[in-house]
Image (cartoon, rainbow, N blue to C red; front, side, top):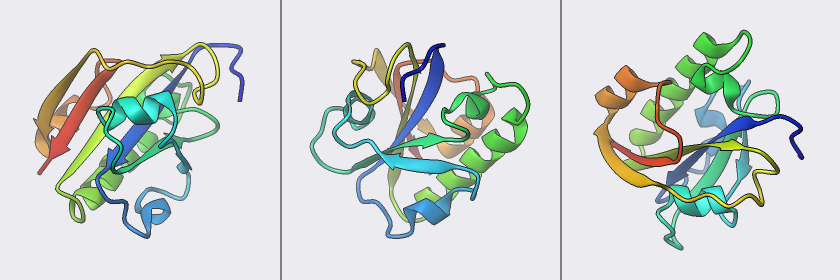
Amino acid sequence: MKNKEMCYFFCISVIKSPSNFAEIFSEHIDSEDAFTTPIGKASRGNRNTGNSYVLTEGGCSCSFIGKSHNKAERASLNIIVGIKRLLEQAPIVSILIHNYRGDWRDEEVTAKCKKSITLEQFISAFPNLDEDVRYIIST
């Protein structure tokens, strides 16, 4: 998808993806494999292990981070619930948010830094997270 306007995209990475990954998040949230994409690599810390997915609702991730017209509160809650569920199956989850000018599959993304946070810290801060920071979330 080529964006005419800038859109945010939310990438999530796990060491080992559960077989039911698509069911972990709300039925309104779509996931697309992002392992080979720049945002997928950045969210994994450029490691060649693990799985990465871009999560979207309506073609982008703007509603998850409060940059959308209407569904931000529900969408943010769906992300929090999904990350809680993932952490029941994996020791850590990493995320990265990037504001794209073009196609998220091709545009270069570099994490400015990484921050290790607890699930509670994530819940307190979300959706007000810094762009291009790799957040490593643990229980």
